[in-house]
Amino acid sequence: MGIWKMSQLKAPPLTDDVKELREYIKYLSNQLASMLKDLDFTLNGDVDFRNVRAKSIKADRMDVDELSAISANLGHIVAGLIESVQIFGSYIATRNGAFPRAEINNTGDLLAVYTDADNSLTIEPGITNEPTITFRNSGAPSLILGPTFGFSGILASLSLLVGTQNGSLQLECGTGPLDNVTVPSWSKFNNASTGLSLQDELDSIRAELAGKADI
Image (cartoon, rainbow, N blue to C red; front, side, top):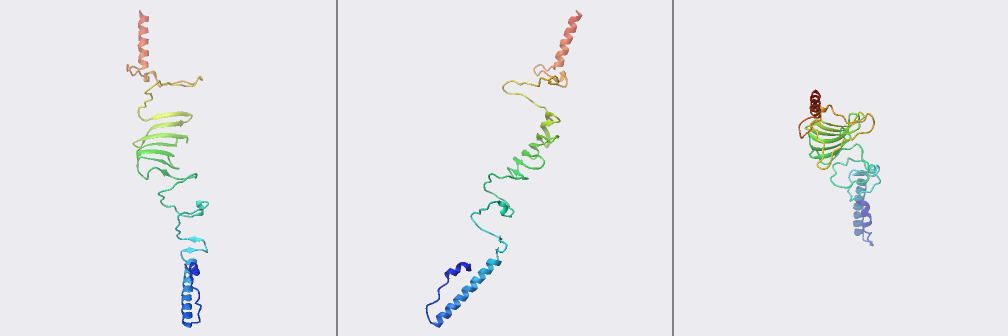
């Protein structure tokens, strides 16, 4: 640009030769015209110094105190590292529209893991707006774990197996007068080995006792 060319101007010739002096004046006029053109481009072209605004800047790096100093749509960022920041109101996913994927969002479910569009595990606001874990199979809830109206609930739409492959299984409750383990009825309490329910066993014992009483 002309501003930088000023230091490269040739010095006037040390001569009284009119021809040489005319050639130098012609050369100097061309240089001044070029510098004025460059100056006009600088002030009114791609860089607007009056508003301190650039239409395009190329640099290896930019150092600013905050990104708010740069007003721009960041577009598609394909590489880099972000540390020690706060992000609000964003959608974050491990894949873009593909499965399987995990995601964080600020609408609907808050945390989600999808094996495909219809099968997922989500953490979302439950019926009492407390975090609830929901498993979905073929789009429908198949297992729900979470608080419901003062209870901690496990609700399944299919058969539910609770067990261990090694060790014992215990059911515990509080020690208060109203704390207990309940079942709908003894007929629903089955012995897997005999196929008999606890109600069947009680009826058998009752019949046996009644028979002995008649003797």
